[in-house]
Image: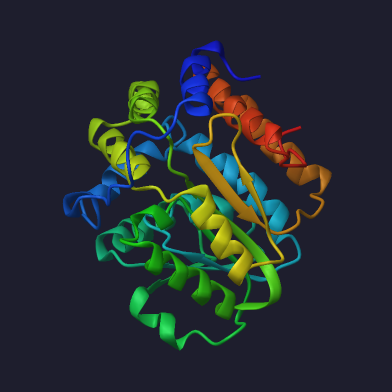
Length: 288
């Protein structure tokens, strides 16, 4: 179960109304090539983002079971994409992102890891992707970077077009919190294991998040065969996904062992995240 330190911000979020509106990310926080090193640092096995990547990787694995080609939209430095590809060497993954700097960092990291089942494409290639070309589409922690709700709507429409009929979907992102002091609490809570510049981007990302209602309206319009889960009771993270498929015992043990290898502090952080989504009804838990 989640730790008691979360109780004060949870109560404020549940009882008090919102005290800030969405604030678009500053230009300096979006598309910086030097961000790549910060993301790579935070995404390694001792970094604060690794548990997020591992959590999503496990749940993505349940969604893409039986799928041969997966598109990762707005993959950034592709730490999530590369981790998922490592667990599924039998599948073909395609990553698309706007930043050339991110792509170069990803190619270098893929070579270091020996990952050969990932292809990176520039965003300019999106119009050439055929309708229904992919069996699954993923997008993790990326949509809040978009400038407006209309841009997010366009992204959902494009995903629906590129997917085969009723294809597999896994979309995750921040949802906007109610209280500015909750944002600051979350920034302080993660400061111990994230680079300072990355943690500042974390603040900008939370302030730029779209609302749960905005996501749900787009899900119903474009991906009605999927379901939505918002971490509860502290609704910072949101997942839109299609039905989970059963994992093999071997694959489940890989995720159990990956959790057990984490340093104690990161393991507790992962378990907090699991608790928040278990309370939201997300089942089954691939770490059990």
